[in-house]
Image (tube, rainbow, N blue to C red; front, side):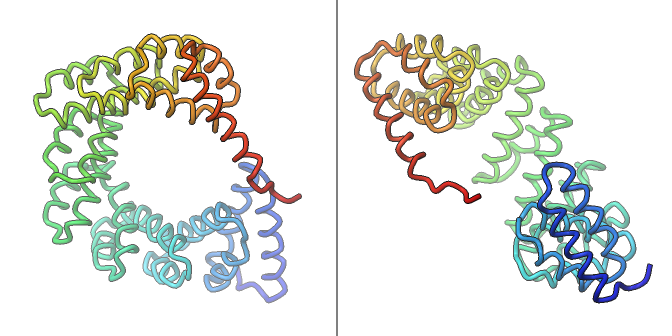
Length: 337
C-alpha cells in the first residue's frame, strides 16, 4: 500500500473517531483494524491519530495495534515510534507491548534493548513485557537472569512478575521462589498473589501448608491471602475458617473480605453470624467495613444485611452509614447527555 494523501488521512481520522464512539468489542475490533492498516503506511500520522482519540481505552487499543504492526516488520522502528509518544502512560504501554512481541522474535535483542533504556519508567514497562513472554517459556531462566541485574528495583520487579506468572502454572514452586526474595513490599505482594492462586487451585494444600508455618508474620499474611481467595469460591466456609485465625488484626483483615462476599450472596445469614460474635470493638470495625462497602456498591444486599442485625447500636450505625452513602451518591455530578 502507498502512503496516504492528506485527504485520505482525514478520512481515516474521521473513521477512527467514529469507531471510538461505538460500544464493546465492535469498537475495539475496528480501532485495532485501523491501527494495523495505518502503521505500515505512515507511522508519523499514526502518532497523530492517537492524539485524535478522546478516550483512553481507544487510545490504548490503537497504540497496541500500531506497535504490534510495526514490530513485525522492524522492532527498532517500533521502538523509535514508541519513544516519541508524548504521554507517559501510552509510552509505557507501547514499550510493554513492544518488548513482549520483540521477545517472541529475538529474545536476546529485546532483552538488550529493554535494560538499556535510559528512562526508568520506560525501562520498567519494557522489562515487564519482556518478562511476560520469557517467563512463559522458561521461568527459571528469567529468575536466574534477574539475579544478576544491578538495579535492585528492576530485579525485584522481575522476581515478582515471574512469581505471579509461575503461580498460574505451578503455585507451589512459585511460593518456594518467592520465599527466597528479600524482605519488602514486593515480596509481600508476590506472596499474597501466589497464595491466592494456590488456594484457588488447591485449597486443602494451601491451608495445610499455612497451618505448618512457624513464622508468625508469614503465617498471618498467608492466612489472609487464603481466606480472600477461598471467599471467591465459597464465602460462608471462608468466613468461618477466617474466624479461626489467631492473630486478631489478621483475622479482622480477612473477615472484612470474606464476610462481605457472604453478605453479598446471603446477607441475612451473614448478619446473623456476625451478630453472634458479640459487640467487641474489633467486631464493630468489621461490621462497619462490610456495611460501608455494601452501602456503596451493593444496594440490593444492604437492606437485608441490616434487617438481620439485631444489635440496636450496630443497626443505628449501619443506618447512618447508608444515609451518608446515599447522600454522597446524590452529590456526585451526573454525566451529561
